[in-house]
Each structure stands twice: as C-alpha cells, then as structure tokens.
Image 1 (tube, one colour):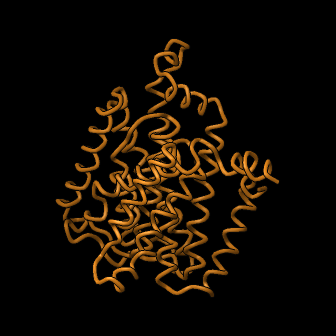
Image 2 (cartoon, one colour):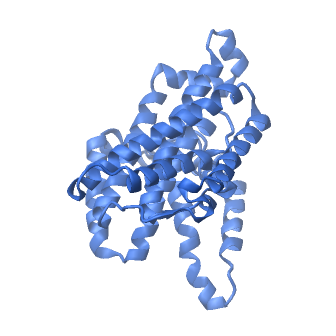
Image 3 (cartoon, one colour):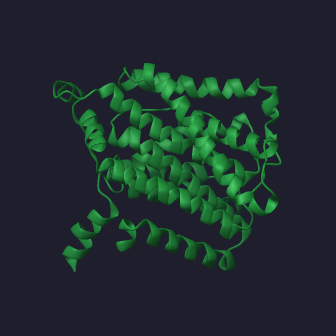
Length: 323
C-alpha cells in the first residue's frame, strides 16, 4: 500500500518486476506486456478528460499518432548522441513527442472545448481522422507506407523500465493535479458546469488545461508504441484505437486511475489469452467472447470495476473491514 503513495518505491517494484519477467516469460508475452504499458498510459491520460473533467473525447488516437510520428522521425533523422547514450536520446525525443501532442491538444481544445457532450465527441473524432488522413499524404513521413527502422530501447528490462518511468510520472502527476486546486476545478466542471461558472471558475480554461495534459501523455504513449513496434503507419491510429481507450476508461471506472490501469491490462491481455481457443475450435471466437465479457461487465458493474474509487479506497472499504 505504501508503494501507491511513493513514486520511488513504485518504480523500484516495477523494475524488480521487469527483471523477474525477463527470465520467466517468452518474447511474445514480453511484447504484450510492453503494449499493456502503452495502453495504461493512454487510458490514464484519457481518464483525466473523460473521467475527472466529465468531457467526452474520441480523438485520442490523433494525439497518440502525433507523438508516435514525432519520436519516430526524430529518432531516425535527428540522432545526435552516440549509441551508448541511445536511451537518454530516446527520453528527450519522447518528451518532445509529448510536447508536440500537447500543442496539438491546445490548438484543438481552445475552440472545441466550448462545446459539450455529443458535439465535443464529434469534433474530437473529426480531429483524429484529420490527423490520420494528413499522415497518409505526407511523403516525408512515409505516407501510407509509414516509418520503419525505428530504434528500440534495447533489451526487455530497459524497455520495461523506460515505460515504467513514464507510467509513474503519469500516475503521480495526475494524482497530484487532482488533489490540487486545479483538480477541484476539473471536478467542478464535471459535476455542474453552470454552478462552476457561477462560482467564478473559467470552465473553458479548466477543460483546456485537462485536455493539454491529457494530450501530452497520449503523445508519450504514442512514442513508446513506435519504439516498441519499430514500425508505424497511419492504420495504427484509426478510430478503433480511440474507442479502445474509451472502453478502458469506462471499464476501469470513470475517475479511477488504478481502475484505468487494471482495465488497460485486461483489454490488452484478454484477446491474446483467448487466441488458443481458435486452435481448439477452428473458429475465431475471440472478439465474440471479448464483446460478451464487456457487455456483462457493464450490466453487472455499470460504474466500472472500481467506480470512482482507487485501490487504496477499495482496500480500506472491503479488505480491511472484512479482516
């Protein structure tokens, strides 16, 4: 429980986990785990907008694409450090990817976040498609062929540690923001925007702040995805990627960071865990079972796995009380 409140201890636990997994699992499972870290970042960042601020964004794949292409292009064209310092260079490029996505989030959010509900969802959906189509027509970024030869972070322990650093930064940044005056502003917008305006809160500014911070970490998630796969093209960032991010947030619980992490791991692992079923039956039933599981989950737990609670709240409410 202390690890949830201490970034250094959390990072140490993740580093030990990465070293243990390096000797205990095969390359296929390692790649799934790296994709899980990307989805954790993506879901936590979207939770800031959809969960805590009460907006509905469907364009997160666009910000992810901006971050992925920025880091991929910079790593292949602008390398300035020797190979021994490749990890440090990648960290700089990932920060740049996040900043590029944050700028895009500001430019999109400033005019569009005056809208609400379905209108905002349509605008953000359109933005994501604009980015994808624009990438298809940019020859210097590979066009429909995409970018290949993107350098990786080295061995699995280094890659997992690198992703873990960003997971910890994302989690505790959003955690601290939500326990500050800015976080109270975000929650006031979610609960009653008219009442928040009556109390003197600039709701548009609050929504733009949440959107920019969310876009930054979505760009970071995209950059990590690019370096894990070593190849990206516009088809990697379709509308379905944004829908997956929304599913993770809703499944984990709107306004629960730990819920977003658990849901992201489930959404990443479940389709792959069901893959052997195809070999037994001869029919690919993975998406059917996956969809039914989501439907049952929404019927039985309409507020998600954690609702608006964190793991520490669940521990105090259920585990300690029963003990």
